Image 1 (tube, rainbow, N blue to C red):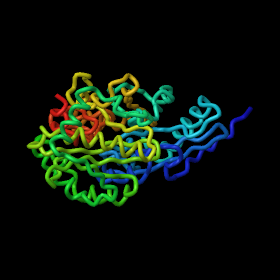
Image 2 (cartoon, rainbow, N blue to C red; image 1 turned 180 degrees about the horizontal axis):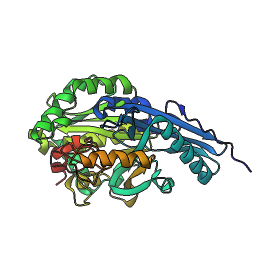
Image 3 (cartoon, rainbow, N blue to C red; image 1 turned 180 degrees about the vertical axis):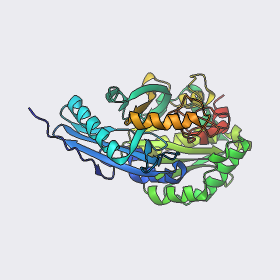
Length: 378
């Protein structure tokens, strides 16, 4: 039976059956940071539908009369997602061929994908991409009748200690306390001697608020009318994510960070989300203090998720020419991808971007947690 494959991919909003990380309005927040433009693409055939969102970045070299690009998943998670399928193999084959043609027409030479640990889409795409395990991460199952059954004993104790000290957690669904959050966030980054990149501009937070209002909230831990710890969350109907977080260093001992996440579990279970995703550690080491801290909220094997990345050269001929230009300029090969991306002081999940790095050049899932949350987990 012949396949009726649509070979033109349509620009669209990636909302069908995906997480908020997969939506264009989320990716657009990172246009300026990545130096590109966010696009969402939909592929449909008789075998189903695939959605994918990416930021398209100009190649940082003079490539003659034609402009070339590479693409990358916006900070967070995404990659191609099968929305519906009657035959995964034939759908994936059709998408791969159609997307290859799309990339050739659009001047896209390669792609770096951050697959989604909760959608578990990496396993479907190993024939298309060079898929690599990056690290393990933690998610809290909000379908538990008593969510705290997943917490380790010391985590429950820290929540009780915060309450005993008079700390209370408050939900801000309107983002009215964003300025307070930004102040605590900046102070946390200063304490951590973070790379200047991580001092996200006010314009970044303004775009965040404009694009994600209604799918974002702040939870503040307050002591004597002072916010001592806070986290910025984003969410879709199924999944919630702790996106950025900060704690005032002088208040670590009050365990406000534990209380913030405990409140988040309560809130997102109440609006029927299925998972609260916390991310991973500063390194891939399972002994990493930040990973250990997050692991206290999810002690079971089911709470541990695997995060994969993917690499793909869609136009080998042009990619090779770009690499020749890069190496001829005296540069050397790097472990991150694409190799020709200028090394800017750190390498994240080998993506040639600085979104997930700390000053030492170590990869992190959510740099904003920084030392404050990592130290709290010791």
